[in-house]
Length: 178
Image (cartoon, rainbow, N blue to C red; front, side, top):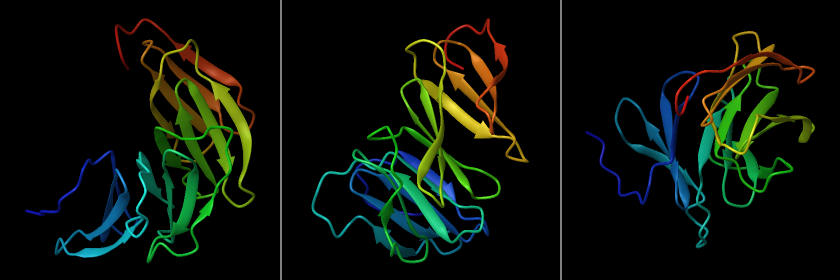
């Protein structure tokens, strides 16, 4: 059993090789060896500020970690947290982060909006609004990265074209959160 004192665990993610997982929350992201439970290091811990890291995701190649705190979406080296830099977005923070299968794009959500951001250029390619004012509760790419699916607290699911942002399908009729 792994035992680490953390204020909260708002997001967890495995590396591509499964050898590391991260636990993100409050001020830091802990990198932990999945076999031994030993700490591999921290991101954000050295700063004595409240960051509230809400989401974290590895790129498919395992080289980078993308995370969102109260102020921004950021990318850093997964090995040691070095090279930390912002990925500008129209949103100040994101509740969810998902990286595309090819590692070129990240989805970030804020309330009912999905930001589709190109990682290399650090620019938003698309801004998708999922219906009314309810929060997007889940978001994902398909295996090829050609479609995005989002689910909202308003009970709807939307399938989007990942290149154009066009709605392919709107599924309604769910009762409660999806």
